[in-house]
Length: 272
Length: 328
Image (cartoon, each protein chain N blue to C red):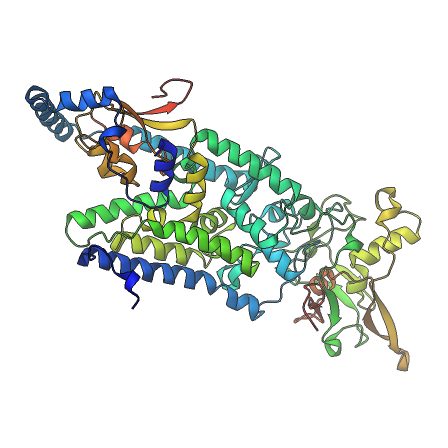
């Protein structure tokens, strides 16, 4: 030991114990807080973040974990992460299969609500967002690929997810189970894609709120014919450049598990 | 050493310094000398006996404490109702919110974000400045005892702890108070270096506020662990020795106009106030012979909880808003 560590007065036993337990408590506390690094570095959960979210690192740095985005979302798509997400605790994510963002607020309310810029204010329209990109992960179970139609409630009678149907109520999303379908060939993923809906409105000369800026420059999803043998038309969903990863296709897909997955590798700033 | 630098030194965890002869005002010197006379000593000893008998016969109700709990619950429930009833009165959580549309940001959370993100958007700056001014006016650590949900749970845990201590089932293990300053510095450095809001991961204030508003979760286990630690091992450990939020607000409140003020002339030096205080080092001045003046402002670590005001048998401690006279 160095000479300089000698004290003028030796520590009493009581003081020494207090010092030692303070050091242990300190190490324990800092150590515990740093455990939060593990789920983040290990990418335990690859979350779809709300529209406008910065890349994962600056997003987690800037998010103040207040949940104001949760409160303004009209379809309650946004959830807050738990302790098992480490430094990501309290940060917002979207479980697209449970309830995806369908942009039914039009104005990106979560972006406007964010006090820190974790959801960047530098975007105004749904097609400018980059939440991820949909992937046709299980084409073999897709009804369109099998040449089948779909009749009934897309997600069954117990599903309580919401979706906006413009033709029913432009301003209020309704329960998906209250809007049954009867389709000759299942095209739910294309039919309900918010980007596609907008693009169709624009093509018809009726952009949302008459605002040309609402028109997506690129298409997001389409069905391409793969076979037409024996009078059975079979088609396959194809994801296009305009996909923003909102996950409505994943949410509305009547197959369990869904045909789609949302890939967030690039939107979160991770190397492929 | 000025009052503010003494107050900050105590806030950072140093033991209060005993006054040297030059520290006393002439009035305080005279008053201390007067209190040491036989006649005054007898008067005081008799007075304390009467007080104790009175306290035994009619245990006082801590009115201010109940009021404070009501305010604390109201603040936190305002967040909850605002969300559930969608009345947009107080949106968000304690870490950041909008009060009727005006941005508010918890100072420690905002600090963590600014250091981790290394960029400050205007809304966050507005929220931070607003909250800074608000809590400066209200006393700084007033946040702790009047708004922080963990504080309330910790107070209840403390009641339990003191009962167990009374039964000699547990003993209090104090820590070095300087630990909190080190935590504050370490969490600042960690936010800066790692680029993550490391402290938010373990902040019981943020965890509880979010659990109340958005529903309970796994993180409550951490809060439960802290409470158990306080019940069985160390009285009020988190608030006293660990919480960097407390230190942040303590620094804000160091120059606050809202203070607890001590009146030497009426004090019997019973020490009732120091028994109930979360941060008894701020009340060393009430020990006989320690007051530097006849009126002393209690230091920055004081949470303005008012328990000393409630417990003082001679009303020698009171809230004061400097420039507006006595509040209570």
